[in-house]
Image 1 (tube, one colour):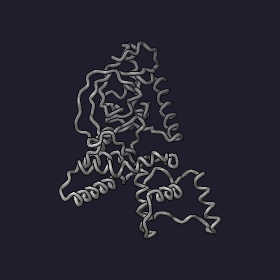
Image 2: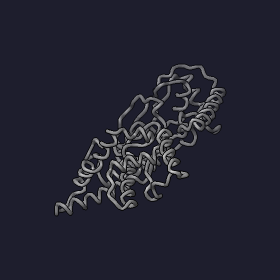
Image 3: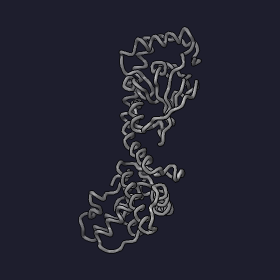
Image 4: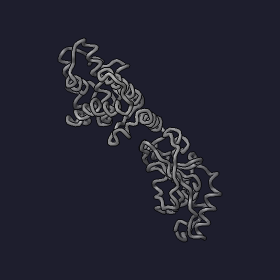
Length: 320
């Protein structure tokens, strides 16, 4: 049992206070654009393709790590403040038992990476948090995830994570190159990377005259195509121009832009030229946009030309 101790409670007024905290959290998170809703386990399970799990026995789990629920994710805020008056009777009964019994029975949790989901014991978590307990005793079943799930994950982040899971299932990149950090901030990029790998596999087979396994093609693409571009991104610190992007965002954006320039100019264009033009056109930082606008003004042009067509717009977390 969680050792909370004999805390003096006036359960009716305490529940009202917990309800006020729910309203305050909803408002604060709305203003600060922070996640306020609990993560629904079944949605996470479906998006992350979770199947295997193991039992981890009774443990003391930090309450701050419990940000999801199996079936009551609409009833409580992210910090388990009660959102509905219908929760009053059970919440007050549990609080009353704590007052006279000095503790809470263990709850049941599912674990996915950093995040814990309440299978049984949502009201107990809420009361424990209200009483200021740092941890709660829990029986834990851990699901084995192929991609990370962090405490700041939002419901709207899950479709992108599902694309990453699908990409890893198709390519095994995380097993072929365990050190890989291929991460997009927007959807659609992983499908394009699969096309890059397929094209690279075809190129290898054409040059070597024999069939190439998917694993060998994936490793070769990562070593000979992806990482050389990423190394340039790191050497030139290109992420400083695109603070909300990842190296993978820039990899795909730069290659798309290079392909566009070669096609539109109908002449060879070096990767260095493509990178310079990409930064010139798409960095969201004002100090890089002002010189560009000035150059166009000095040329007598009203505004910069559109560098990319919609079909080749950069996949990046930064605004254009």
